[in-house]
Length: 181
Length: 318
Image (cartoon, rainbow over all chains, first blue to last red; front, side, top):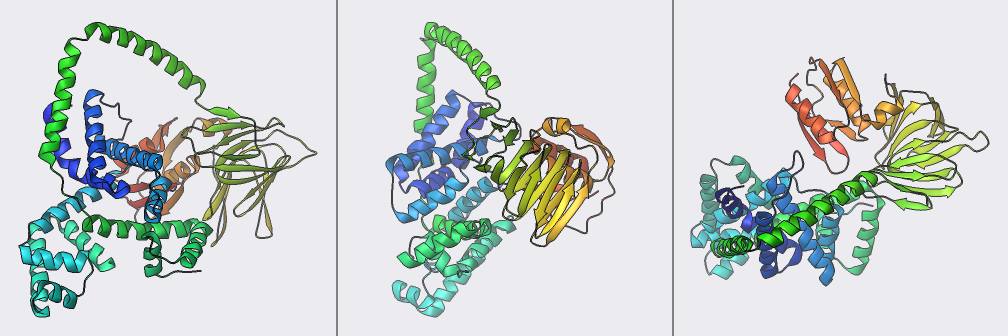
């Protein structure tokens, strides 16, 4: 792999990978260390990939396994983490599939799109759809009327739909996640 | 016992009371379906939780750090040629040893059969004290209950030594299998059990019914019922080599046989698809992934290989 391709790979996956490790470990600094370390090793000793396996799949699998190894070694013992550890361990012998990687990239894209919303719309949208507050609670928190909250959220959805116009599946993923929530 | 979405989400996020936690822990262990359901909810929770806790990182600064490290490495290696040559020799010796080791341990063999849980990537051969040979697949569990009597979860291939005084018995999820001396494969899961006879005769007992199976017979037991089919040319030799020869076969027949040989469950998502393709090809000792990839190229089929030993056939255009 030439350096330009390596750099593109890094830029495309670094933030999703850090968040993936962060979800397992709950420590962003260590997550970043793991991801950077894996990329450095990848450059120094490029792996020989088995047939049908991609480089991103290899990297995500490495990050997942390293994060789990650190978790086990440090015995981070809260129940929520144990559950996450259990669910990951169940599948920890499998490689991360392309579909899973796609999902990490989609969530990253959703995050970036939400960050691009106008400040008020972003705040109302985040409080409602991600933090699960009611419109009345948001109105009180933001010091605005319920009607205005509704307006901000519908504007946010409209903007997201426009931003993700060429990625209908992404927009539907957002709706799917929030409706299930 | 069924649990609503809120209770399951509380369990996943560690918010349930200790009584609910224990009850759900028990429910989770009751069946594979419950684990799957839990995993589905965990996925959704994971997506929302990932978004709400999504962390912004400084990718530029991280790249600078990585670039610095990989550049340092290059500079150092220029002055380390002698060490490098020595390292190459050492690596070469290590590779030779590694290749020899890998060849000799391609299939690990054990003789202690009291309780084996096998999760390795390669097959594990169990040499039983009566001379029988049992090859366990990934994630299989084999438990010796008594002399020539076992419990099995997962998939395994049995080459049973003949002993007319002691029948060989295997208890599986959906019944019991009895033999005197023969060769056959079993895939036993909570959802379904499948026995494929490659040589000799096997008796399968399920739901108070007995089925006598001969070479090439395949029995599948699910909660919906029992089906018995006959397949041509299933022999111990081609089973071991995963040698599949197709002549003028429909994609349906091809996939059914692939499912047998690789001990997987086949799920047809589109039952109405036409099946006019005729396949003439041979696979020998290939991985499931490469067989499916080739078939997809041949037929335009769309599929998904799932981690729980399932293949979902989404569509095909033959």
